[in-house]
Amino acid sequence: MPNYVHSHDLGILSGGWGADWPDAWGWFDEISNGNAIAPSGNTNIEELNDPLVNGWLSDMQTSTTQMQKNSYASKIDMEVMKDAVILPETYNKALLYRSPDLTNVNVQTYYGMYNYGILGAK
Image (cartoon, rainbow, N blue to C red; front, side, top):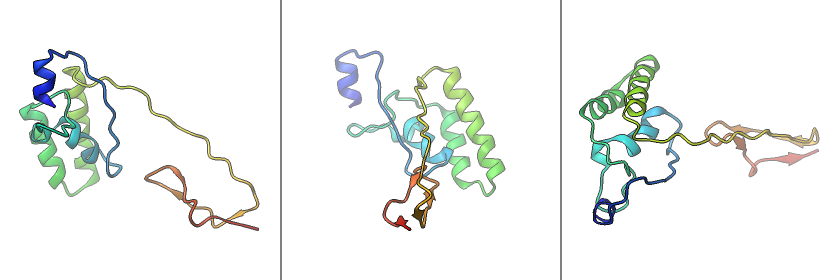
């Protein structure tokens, strides 16, 4: 994809990304790590290859506490926003309503929705 982008002189690209797991490393690694730039299937469409960001991602991956991970996430977020390489869009949030007649109700934290496969009814 980078070759196409450069050969067609594209300037602003738009894409979406949903992390494989709900943490900052799962989010930032694919869209902001210089090692993620690939000739095809590229998820780092801004082609960010910042040594600071790359190093913080590496450090975040080996961090042992949530406090350390949060610290690196904050640094990465500030650096990426400072360089204006990613345009934040929207975060959708939905109100979950359920009938009082439902049983075995479980909200999956990762997806933020009901696990419909295990719902029951009174």
